[in-house]
Structures are given as C-alpha cells and as structure tokens.
Image (cartoon, rainbow, N blue to C red; front, top):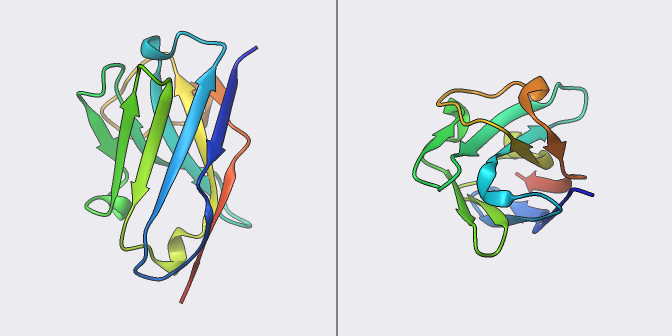
Length: 125
C-alpha cells in the first residue's frame, strides 16, 4: 500500500532552520506532484508548497515565500521541505501529500490522493 513517511520535525528557536523529509513507497513517485500542508491547533489544514513531477516547477503560499524551499529526488522517492528563518507562527504538524496533478496555485485538501502521518514542528520565540 502507499506510504508517505515524514521525518525531520522538532523544536527550534525562532530564526532557526529545519529540513523535513518525506519518503514515499507503494506508488510511482515520479507520476505524482508532491506537496506539503500544515495544521496548527484549532486551525484548518493549509497548503504550504508544491512541486511538479520532475521538480522543474514549484509553488508556495505567500507566508513562506523566500523562507521555505521544496525539492524532490525521484531516484530516492523523497520530497523535502527546507525551512529557514522560522517563526513561531510556523508551528504546526506538517503533512506530506501526493497529488495526481500539478497546479501552479494553492492546493485544496480534496485534491490530494495520499497523505503522510505528519511531523510536529514547534518554533519557540
């Protein structure tokens, strides 16, 4: 079955960096656009970033532009999210997601076929 397994979350001070990884199995990775979402306590799950099948195209929510970078390695079936200049408002559970199509805009949760289990990111002030 399809599995998306995130890692790399943790506690970091404001201004610090973290790199999230998501290892995929059970699917033809190169045929899926990949995305990251996040969900803070009491809030809806929100889109963060997406990357196209080959990695040539990326899209970010405005609040993370210039600070976060999404990338993928199709040989390793892995997608990454490099997060720099972290802010307390970035605190959330971060989810890896696989979608059958790439859009150059924010994704909606109902456009996602597969989800990871999530990894906690906590940014202290």
